[in-house]
Image 1: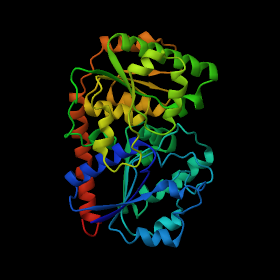
Image 2: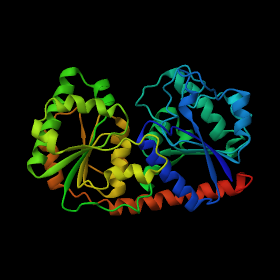
Image 3: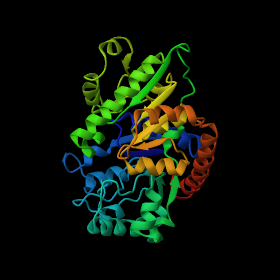
Image 4: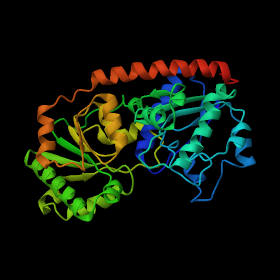
Length: 374
């Protein structure tokens, strides 16, 4: 079987972790004899004007494969006014109808954190009318990740659509990791992954400085507790925060206790990328797949967020180790959370595997029925 996989593959290590989990689970549960051919979705964004889904060239490409996979990623959120369907997977229904290859929407995000309007909701309803409710719906299998997307579809877009949608744990929870071992059991490491772009987009300059000072307090506390600090960037933007943070840290800490993990945005190996977290004894993180990585590796962690998607993810997992940055908390609230809360995620991972495997059984039945070489 040959599949065209349309998603974001470059620029954010969370995407690499996500796709590694999907590839492993698909080959384990659906079809091991499959070749995924990657197509970068960002090349189709109108701001780049490089490619378009609404061309005969793309339709011909799509019809040359046995299967098309869209996602995972936040590509079905209806925020984009200039899109045919309100999303970054910008294809018209007329052109979608020309594609005869079955399409799997793979743990996509479809939620409201980027905003939406009456117009974009109207457009995505027409899109979902076709792929979920029309006579052609058998050609599509639609799954959303556990980031609040299912509730958004049900409560905002329409309950009739949610009845046709599967909510599935994000594929990053299943990123292969078995070859990793702790390299130095005597060294204590606090991992930190903070998204500078989210902070500066949503905080005032004074609020941002206050956050940096809290993070400085946390780092200084852990250094006194004989920890080293490992910064784990997920995108190039994350380096910018380090420049601001280093202005507040003592010179001795910068010289002796700080390391920065390699940013492997062009890596093809999820094992290598998630390995940045493996030696961490504890972690403080912001990005979506940073939290997922900590659960996957059973690392005690606290999440900080300004993102409703992450709050929804934690709600779906019944986890409480998350702080909303907009709410008043101190550095020692975070430090204290590690001491008073259980951080063993083994049972949670077992539950996620059961849920994920159950839905993949349905995907396998659909593939066997509708994909020519399934």
